[in-house]
Image 1 (cartoon, one colour):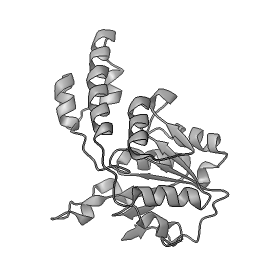
Image 2 (cartoon, one colour):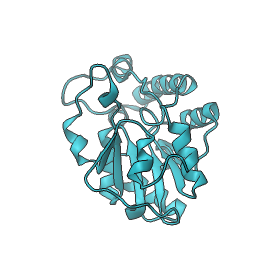
Image 3 (tube, rainbow, N blue to C red):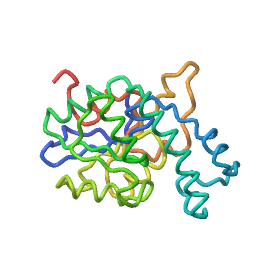
Length: 217
């Protein structure tokens, strides 16, 4: 099921780009960020900084060690990743209909390539953290859209985390939160920030309905 702030008519493929997050959106979420933080030695608590942002405050030696740990975890997760139900159907279906489709992740280029090769998925553009500013800054959406020849206002950003929604909203894109917790047993309550998304879906195939598309096309 999909919940939205407004129902959209069929979206024009000649104008639209759809930007997907990777982990937890196209794949089942299997990152144990708490374990990664402990291995790196990052502090815990409500005021903790995200892992990538924490690297900026490290010495060169500390950062090199932390990046090696992160690379190992990212590589393993990409090598063992499992697609979300409907991921291939949605990505391939959008491209077949003429929509520009991009992968936009805070992951490394190596792990993104491993993921793409493992699942034989094709995107019109791939942006990773090596390509510049990362989410939640809206710059990635703007630069991906520029590379695709699309306006951010005609873009759809699909993700499972607050950073995806903030990034998309900041660029003026339509935002879609994938919250699979709605289908869990028992259901996992939505976070307070879920209401910031233009649409909330519990499975990827519902994205097509949000865009006014028939999944059978």
